[in-house]
Structure formats: C-alpha cells, structure tokens
Length: 350
Length: 264
Image (cartoon, rainbow over all chains, first blue to last red; front, side, top):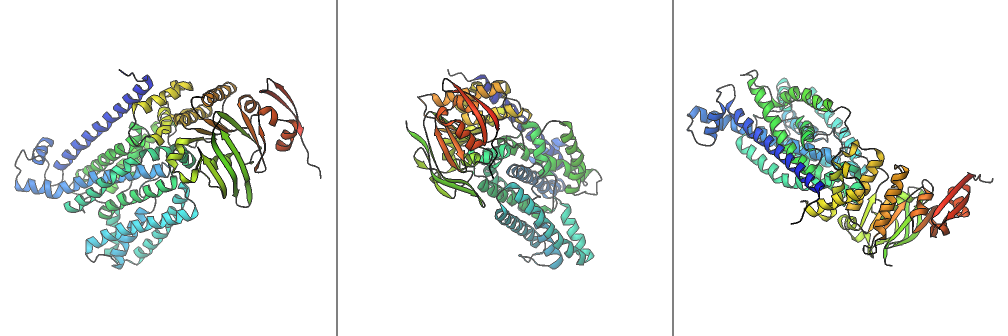
C-alpha cells in the first residue's frame, strides 16, 4: 500500500472539512427555502406541511396550491438562482481584478442596466416593443454593451486590473449623468416606475423567466469553476506571477468579465438592481473556505442563495402585508453583518 | 552539456530607453548562472523577457531548442519557472495551496495525490513543513520569498529564473536557499539550470558556475566567477574602486574602497 505524506493527508482532511461545511450550508439554504415557501402575508404554513406539499405527499387546497406554486415558488427559486448568479459573479470579479472591494455591479453592469431601463421607461426607446419585456431586454443589452465598451477602453489603456476599474468608474459616471438627466425630465409616474425598478425585487419575474435565468446561470457555472486555478494564480501574485504559472492574465480577465456580466445582467434585467450579495457573499465564504477559488466559488454561490432567501423572507414577513424589496432588506441586514465579519478579524490581512 | 536556453540578439526598450541591446547568452544544463549589474541594468527585464512576461522588440529566445513564442504559456511554464522580486498579494491562501499552484501547468483541474506529495516533499526540502497550513500573508517577507521559491521548485521546470531570490532573506537562509538550489541544479540525472539575478557578489561567487555581468544592455563579461569578478570589471559595471581576495576560486572578499568619480 502506498502511504501518503502526512502533510498531503492533512491537506486532504482540511479540504474534506471545508466540503462538509459547504454541504451543511447547502442543506440550511434548502431548509430556509422550504420555510420561506410557507411564509407570507396571505397564509403561513409550517415547514413540514410545506415540504409535504412541495414533494406531492399531501394534496393542498386550491388556495394553498396557488399561493405556493404560483406566487411563492417563482420568487423563492428566483432568490436561489439570483443569489447563486450574483455571488458567483462577485467572487469571479473580485478574483480577476484582484480587488476585494469589487462587486458584480462595479464595472458598469448596474449603470448599463439602469440606462437601458431609463431609456425604456422615460423615453419609450425599446428594442422589444412589449411594455415590461421591453425594460428587461433593454436592461440586459445595455448592461452588456456598457461592459463591452469598458473592456475595449480598458484594453486601449492597458490590460491591467486597475485600468478596467478606472474606466468602469468613468463610464459609470457618464451613464449615471445620462440617467439623471432623463429622471430630471421624467413625469412623476415614470420617475416612480424607474425608482421602483432600481430597488430590486424578486416578485417581477414569472416562473418561465426564472427557469430561463436558471438555465443560463447553471450553464455558465462549470466554466466559472473551471477558471478557479487561474484565479488562484491571479489573486495570489498578480499578472507576472500568473504568467509564470501558465495563465494569460489578459485573456482570463476579459473572459471572466464577460461571464460575470452575463450572469449579473441576466438576473438584474428581471429583478432590478440587487447589490450587496455579490460583494458580501464571497467575503462570507472566505471565512469558511479561504481564498481557494475551487471551493470559494461554490461556497459563495450557496451563501448568495442563503442571503437572498433570508433577506427576502424577512422583507415579506417583518411588516406583512407590506413587502419590503429584497434590495433594501439586503442592505439593511447585510451592511452591519458584513461590517462585523470584517472587523472581527482585525489585524489579519485579507 | 546540452543547451537549455539560448538568447539571440534580443533587444528591449521602455519607450526611448534601450534596456537590452542585441543581447546574447546561453545556459547549459546543470549550470547555475548569476546575473550581476547595477539597478536598472536590465536584469529583471531580461528575466521577464525569457518568461514572456515582456515581449522583446527584436531577437529570438529558445528554450530546450524551441522558440518560446511558438509555445503556449502552459508549455512554457512546464519548462521555466520564474520567481519575482516580490509577490503582491490581494488575498491570502495557505502556504500548501500557494506551493500547489506550481503544479498548475501539469494538471487539468483535479489534484492527484502525487501532486500533493510533490508539494509536501518540496516544503520539506526547503524546511517549510511547519508553515504548510499557515496563511501566506501572515508570513515575514523572507518566509514568503522561500514559499515562492518552493512554488517554483514544485513546478518542476528545466530552467529556473530567479529575480533577487535572497534579497529578503537573513544570512543563514541565503546560504541555505542557494545550497538547495545548487543541489537541484547539480543533479546530473536531472537536466536543470538556473539564471539568478542577484546583487550580492559574495553569494554569486560562492554558488555560481558562471557569472554574467550586465552593463548598458549587453553582457560585458561571462565566465567563471574568478574570471569575471575582477577589479576592472567591478569598476566598470558598478562604478566603485575595490580590492579583491579569493580563496579556493569561489570564496571572495570584495572590499569596496570608494565610488569612482566621473572625470569632466
């Protein structure tokens, strides 16, 4: 029998423990999803009853069936998928730009989506001439267009992470100015619609939308995880170190920015702006699995789902029947929690 | 001995500043070559050109008889590993995982037990086993430098390119690292070589098979330490007057007397 080096065994054991933590977190997220399905302003069900309805063990009443399957299920599924997408995009962006302050909305995705939505709502300029779908398609396409412009301008300056961030900030200001100008001339009704869009809500997408979003996000996940090694090299030692490890920083950075933008825009085009998850979930995951992207990406994805579910459930139940949009709830509960996580390790470098 | 690295007429400039001018050199297997020169002489630039971090304007670089521009970065990193002067780290990792990055060119995604054992053996080889599960960013500068050298060794290349690998190390660690490097390079069963940019003349003389003096973008002198480290060469390259004593052809004592003032 071949005996392994004790250090190698210790490395395997550490990896197994981290995997167990990710599995436990996934189970907690699943249980939270079942709980969330049972909670709302119209009728509250305990977890066991909800689970029996969900798995077809019990026949629910028509009202219960409608509430769970038509009202809450798309919303809960959107929370799970949206959390996966935004948190994964966040960890990818932080990695490829080697900057812990970056989120999926940093590089113009949000400002592009807001510009697209404002064009549709205020000026009625849409690519698809169907009221709500017009806003979604505009937000999706404009967020990708803005990211494309940022990548091209970033490449003109240099291929470094800093140039992408600086160009992203400049473009965000420009698109922000255009949106502000449109808001200034908008009617009260248009202004209200645009403001509500920007809050970010999980109630907008229909089940079929959520399923399509899920297909895109799940389809992109394997590629995101495949780039883990490259991200490890980039985040640890920068571009020179990455090249000497066989990674081309310019290619990997561009590819990751495109993938992150796709993952983010496909979600926020439907939900409106949801920040914070993409910034905070990767940092929370780092507390458990460290900065190895092979584990960080899946762990961030699970944390993202958990955060979204938790914030949305709280938003729906805290002041029921008033529903507070998930974007606002995330900032309210997430900000202080995030601050706690960062300060509890004071003195320890990221 | 076979040639592992050939540099033919390589030129590189930063804007108007010509850093490397039609530079030629070659390195054979089992050879530890030190690169000496003043700050800004182009030592780091040369190492970066060899590893395709920088692309020279002119010239050809061949590793294991193949043009490096015809290889992808994975192929190149199986042949060469580069140790930068310092590693800028935004996020931290366990030391074991940092060294494991050296296996990146050899694996697709899944880590084999052989790869893990290779990392473990490298950590033991450099006496870093007690650091294996400590965070990289929590180490001192010298410890970090040793970890990055361990990563380069775990990469199992034919050619090591090291940019001032002992600059952050204490005296004992400098000797220890250079001895380990010499041990790796000198193994006749494993055709490896190293090009080391270094400032410490004593260390260079003690451990190098050959020394290259880089001056104004060209190799001014190349040969055994005792042939290259002369009072005249030191005066020309470093602009200082000195007296030199040698023992056993490899132990040197350079006494720097004064800087040489340029005549009007």
